[in-house]
Amino acid sequence: MPGKPLDPASPRALLGAELRVARERAGMSQAALGEKLFVSGSYVGQMEAGTRRITLELTKSIDEILGTGGFFTRNAGKQGKSKYPDHFVEAAEAEAEALAIREYAPQIIPGLLQTEAYARAVFRAYQPTAPTAIIDELVANRLARSAILANETTPLLWCVLDEAVLRRAGDDPKLLAEALRHIANLIRTSRIIVQILPFSAGFHSGMQGFLQLMAFDDAPPLAYVEGPGTGQLFDDPATVGRHALTYDLLTASALSPRQSLALIESVAEEYEHDQQP
Image (cartoon, rainbow, N blue to C red):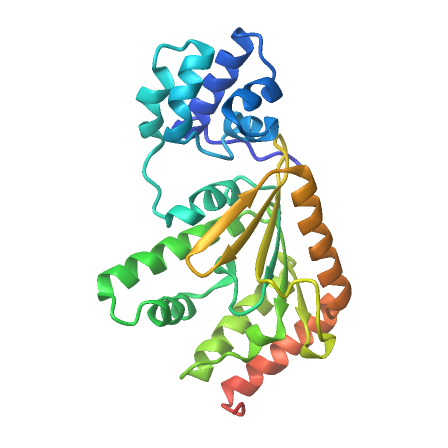
């Protein structure tokens, strides 16, 4: 699969490139710099590749260790303020550069696959008293993420959806029907792979919650786990490997892609005719 180069005009990509130059000029490996920064060598590699932003907390140490005269401290702010919640910033930015994304969603349709109406209903449920302008902004940001699917092949997106995702209709069953038809269309155009984890699977490896795995062309893989208002991105190979095994077990317990598509379209038809309780 061909790599997806960063936008050369991206401040984060340019700052990462400067970090690589400064590190190599200092004669340090990624692992050696990471040890001094109390992060992994792969974390340094991800900052250099632009898949992770260089945080303000690290810039002072980087300047001191590499002797860059405050360059990174002065320029870290130029990476721009993210439009995503703090706990999701790094994951969202990494997602935009990934060659492959694998997700397990236990309760709701993943953000990359949500329709506007579905996203609006989800955010309104999260924040029932928020002003309409706030909800509009959240919806716009979520839909902007899905622009990565405009590319016909990259990233590869493979999702395992718990059957609960198909059954949580809310007040408007037709809203969920539209969302499921959207997913079915993406499957039928060979843009995404989706498997449904049926209730009949019983206990399974993903019961702790949402999981996302990301693979890159020039940086180590990442794993992201999320809870209510919290999220954590992992780059440690052992931790990423453990989460990858969790995902493999989920796919083994799920319906085949063909069976999953049939179930998605069947449930969508039921909701279109409002036949679900």
